[in-house]
Image 1: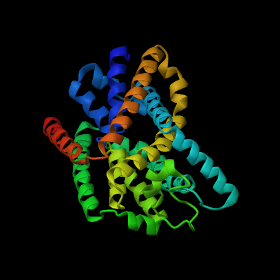
Image 2: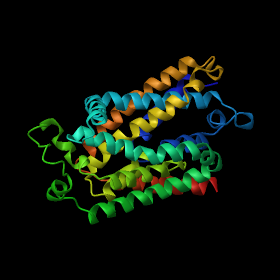
Image 3: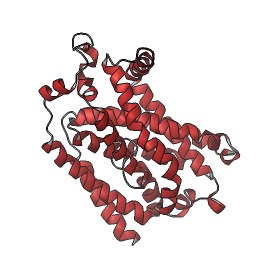
Length: 308
């Protein structure tokens, strides 16, 4: 049975680690394995891989995180959705939100297709704590590589201006509140696909969706704050879509008797996700991925030694 205390702890861990570049899935496996006992039993699968209350609980946490992201960026999403609908009607990309809408669609395609085909298989093959520990360590290495790519591809406003060619229809004066999104809109189709494929690595337990997406953004020359925002925007449809597909788990008999803890865990996850994205947006205005890389390397290495 899932207790209120367990739901609160797991909800808080999920909400923070989903957006911090340190892997929520990896932490859900490693934290349960380190604590052992009822915690480790909680994450186990039923006979023949059947659904369990914990899987339904995880669905609720992911939906809560997606709702928190939608709430935090609701102005952006209103503009992006409106821009997407407009481009379907006009066939043109005349504004920053319109361009962002299609960049998000393009970047979501790789993880949408490969996630549908491979997610359950990869989780079954690499769901053990030792694999999560190894991949968490490798996640730290990738974050360090991302910082190296960032320095090599130092962006400039002149380069963004050259690449952001929309026939002169978009100007800082026309959309003053979206001026900070101009570097994001400067990305091309190839950039979006590259970042989207980088996100696919998070299908392996221990790799961070947010971390890999940020590294992809740094690789394409974005500043940390812009790479982080694109990662959060890109995570929203991926997390929400996966959650919606698994909604039957949440409404099924697996949650009988634990709907109270599930609700509490989802609320905690949503609040912690909102606080996490608020913190990270400010953090990445002046700081880098290196502290998270050091943490992943340390936590992963210790866990490898422990579970070997």
